[in-house]
Image (spheres, rainbow over the protein chains, first blue to last red):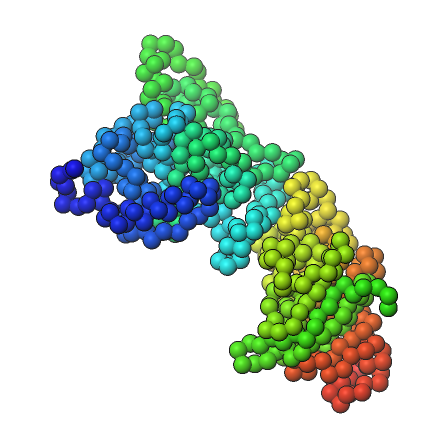
Length: 293
Length: 259
């Protein structure tokens, strides 16, 4: 099939290693939201840099795939660039920055603004896969809570938030119920992106390298963010517009631009922002509203 | 007594390795009754409670619990899910060290709310109101509602643990030395509180203590344990005033002051 220019196996991992990951992924898809352990391999990158995501992607990718890699929504940050290069070199696949063009999108922290389509696969790099990790550290008890669907404890965290901040303050890694059965930690994506998981036509795969677990949200699956009946889930909006493309709907990053504490807001999704700027060329940008705090 | 017992234990045996912690313990507990279990350290009192609450599976013997619907359940034969559900709704368990029964990093209100959420409550407003109500019932100032138990005194922690356990109106409470580390005046208040709450809600309870005065004050019937077995049982006043067994006599006579 391929000429292994690198001297490594196709997509770096051995065929056996990939088979192990695929088997775990099949189970994960069959039981939405359930964390499936797998025998993760050492990757040529440190833990915390996306070893889980890379193993999932490497197990799925073929020469016909088109890969997009983002980190905090951007295609051009160090982590995204190195993972994209690594997979392009070892899996000989095409790479892209266009969300609509990609068959596999590996991500850290974001779901692209462009709506996902049927047939696309999102691969998440997950640091802490278990939403109960810091609430119930005892492993045996933790497993019992998942097995028996005893998730009352998750509401204690929300209770503390509302008590302290007057609202549910958790702004990323916001826990959600998958298929009304398992509580899931949607990796560190912002709460803003949680609604995009619900009934999404794409397949969402989560890989935690250090913890050696994978889990999945299959296409068209119910994903409900946890909330109180009297404090419903809110995705939240920034109340600002992107400085570059003027978008007021997308997820924005706040950037310090000078030594005087000047700050601007820009789209976190760099491909989305670029496409908007191109299509708006010549037209006047919607004014960025600056709010004094 | 014509009423059916709420809790029955028959011939319980339990071992930690080669050490036999329980050797053939049986008991019956009726609704609205508080049963005392006394004995020296290592006599198997706490182990008995762990078996009664369905946490430690006995090597022999059975525990039966009659639930709200009147069904007599073999505690170790029903599914784990059902057993745990009973434990967090119909059963209260106060540990010897309240720090182990509380979430020390979560506010006092959150500790009470946890029990409500575990029983299915999903409204913040309702949970908070009930947390306030229970804090009041156990005489913790409302101003401490949002403080974590790390900032509570020992007596307040004991009382918070009680509030947390009672918040779902259990039918049975298991108390393991509820006043263990408290000074005399605080101890009296906590005891008083347990008594009044038990009366108010018609609670049945098993109270484990090594303090005969506490047993005298709170319980109607008492069991004296030694080396994992019951050496004597009967009405509390009878057992403490007129102990039959030499071990009980020793226990009563070795109490400082009047038991």
